[in-house]
Amino acid sequence: MSDVIPVSVEWLSVREEADAHSRSRPLARKAARMTRAPIVVHDLGSGTGSMMRWLAPLLPGPQTWVLHDWNHVLLDHAAQRASDSTGHPAVVRTSVRDVGHLRESDFAGASLITMSALLDVLSDEEVGSIVAACVAAGAPALFALSVTGRVDLEPFDPGDRVFESAFNDHQRRTSTGRRLLGPDAVTTAIDLFRAAGWSVRADDAPWRLDASQPELVAEWLEGWVAAAVEERPALEEWGDEYLRTRRMQLADGALSIVVHHKDLLAWPS
Image 1: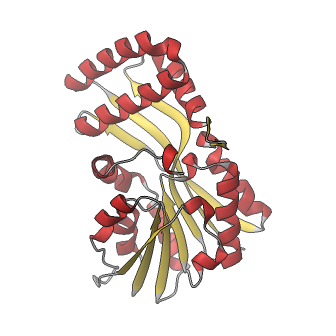
Image 2: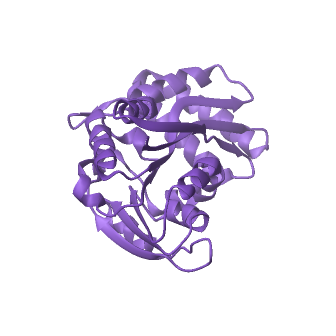
């Protein structure tokens, strides 16, 4: 799965604050009420541990976090500890694994299974495997920050919907034999949990970006347009012009962006 998740420590650091502001606290609080101490959380696609740093203070302790990611370089930066709601540090373990192939046995003793900004870069088969493992383990699942495919930019530009459509097609591309779910991932996961007889609640979790976050906005814009052009090469010249316009608006403090995401919480009924 490493070929389709081109992330870096720098990118994860740039986006961590926006992620923290966007994730659904109501769903996190509901998940907290479902857990009993001592808590064991398995976090999938942990990266540098931002989900742990955000969620651990909202959960009671004592806590143990098992961080799963295929990228050991990212996990090496997850050593920064987190504390529970009483201020006690959590125990952290790391697991270098392809999260798309985790099974029930990997979640033995789990109180909660989490992921953030991962669901939409998985295939149908991988999401099915993860849902099946959660259901078999009987542990509630809190999946955060999955893109819905909708982006709102101000001021309006005729290219907005064109690049949005091309980006979404890129998110649904087939890579090394894996057809990625992209914006369809949330609906797919919800349907799978409900088919298994579980309850599911979803909540909006939008990124709200503006000129106060110039580095994040610039990196997101570059990546968004680059993916659209990769999917539809005929957009390259337009993409260059579009980026020049948006960069000027960002520099002038005139640009704002809402990148829509969904969070979901699923639990045994």
